[in-house]
Image (cartoon, rainbow, N blue to C red; front, side):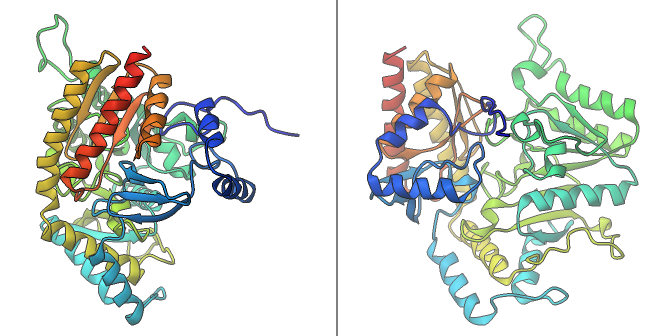
Length: 447
């Protein structure tokens, strides 16, 4: 019996089953079409992935090159390209590591793994210790297990619309219906609350006061008080794909509430760590968590790598297994992580993200002032979201940008999410913004 296909849910990314995507595919050359059809036959289909957009044959810096020779500035990058694609320092380190030690069997350790763990500890002033995993979904699972062991509790509070990975434990605390719908029972004890939204969360009864209360934060506090046995609040400090910084005081309120009620605060910075927000870690804008999950860009845009960083006093699980992953201390991945952090530091990319991000937001605000279809602009560091007035318009802008050499992600149906490499040359950023501006102008003319 063939399962009934429902219309895809609007959420994490742009939809790969829309009429706009069909139109895009009809314009591709025969060789690309043939390979996309082979890919479609070989892989299970799933929303946001297969069927795929195009066939990539090369990547360097901020540029993707396709089979047909087309080039895109990649302002999506799956959030892995803080140092761009194929950064020479990362590539060189991996070549060297391949000649030295290509794999480390479990029960043994290796120098790159030790040095990366020490480096991450240094970045947190030695308050945190590390565990590595081959991906951040696995790291989220380890963070949840650690919170249970530390607190003796199992319940969590997390946010609707959040994304923490696609495994059963991660979607249990996640809040995207695209990943949760129709899969059956999830983890018990997973309470969900509305995400922080400056418009909805800040009490503003007369349209004047922007600091007279924090409804969303107080709601978390209310659940903590009523449940009384929450192990952890887990959240993205800033929702990457919606680029929605919380209102002032939000995380401070929740941090204090967690401390009062004996709950841990877990920040999932998978997509926004390592300079993306203009700080090495996003939590530096707000409060320090008890457990931190990082990933994606940690592998330098080449190797899969994630980490759980937790307070040193939580090292109490020596008699159990929190992760036990085959590639936990993979020397290649760890060497890539070291080279990535060294590059971020040596090239001053955290400061550059802060400075260039301000310029990016200024340019996008100008588009908002000029075109009525742009409802809002939000951002922090080199991550920005442009909210247009409809999902249809967002798709139109995205495919027009693709036609002209700019790739990015559409999130929450109508948010154009821009996450360029932190080391993107300024002239490439300007060219990308010209493409975006022209596409928004075209969509606006057809308003």
